[in-house]
Length: 304
Ligand code: GLU
View (tube, rainbow, N blue to C red):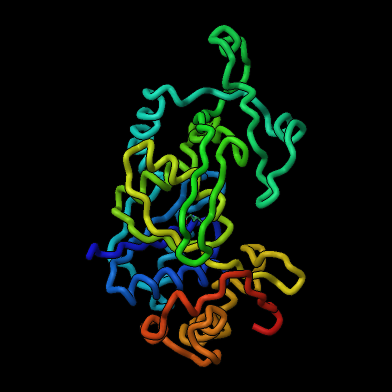
C-alpha cells in the first residue's frame, strides 16, 4: 500500500487559534494512526499578512502540543520559481489571460457566491484584443480559463462534492496584480512537490477543491484524498478566527497544559467522550474518521 503523506499548511499571519488547532490535530491523528508521514509547509504567500516571527512561533506551538512533523517543505515565499514553471505550463496551453477588472466592478456585476461570498468571474477580460489590453492603464492580474465542466470528488468526511467551474467560480486568479502567485496554484504545486496523498483542512476550503483538482489534472499531478473538517463556531454562529484572542495559542497556553487543550479538542472531534487530558499519541490511538462530526461544531469561548 502507498505510504500516506499528510501535511500541516498553516499561514503565518498570526498566532494559531482553536480552529487551526482542530484541523491540525485531525490531520496529525489521521496520518499517525495510519503510520504515515507529516510535512509542515508555511504558507507565507501574502507578504502583507505574513511575518517571519509568526513562522517560528507556529512551529514552537505545534511542538509544544506534541504535533510533530517529519519534514519541512520550503516555505511558499521562497518557491516563486516553482510556481512560475507551472504558471508557464498553463500559459503555453493558451489558458491564461490578463484581467483588468477592479474588485468593485466585479461586485457590482455579479451576485455573491452563495457558499463563501466569492463572486463568480463573468469572463469580462477573456476576449479582450491585444490592442485593448495595451490600452489599459492598470497592472493586471492573471486568470486561467476554466472549462464548462463539472468537477466532482469524494471527500473522505463530507461525501460527494461537485462544482461546475464556469457557473460556480468562473475563470479564477492564478497570479495577483502584485506579481504574487495565487494560493490555488501554489497549493497544488506544493502538495505535488511534497508527494502529499492526504489533505485534511477546514471546510472553508471545500469550495476551492474543485479548482485545485482541475489544476492538478491540467498540470499532470495526482489528486490527494481530501477530508474537510468542520469549522468551529461561536454560539452566535460566527466563525472562530484569529480575532478571537481569548482562544488563540497565547491565551490557551497561559491557562492549560498541552494535554488539557488536546483533550478538549479531541472531545469536540468525537474522539474521546469526555474532555479529559490526553496526549496526541493517545488521541491518534482512538482516531477514526467515523467518529468525527461532519457539520460545524459550537464552541463557547466563555466556557472552553
Ligand atoms: N494556509 C491555509 C490556511 O491556513 C490552508 C491551506 C490548505 O490547507 O490548503 O488556512
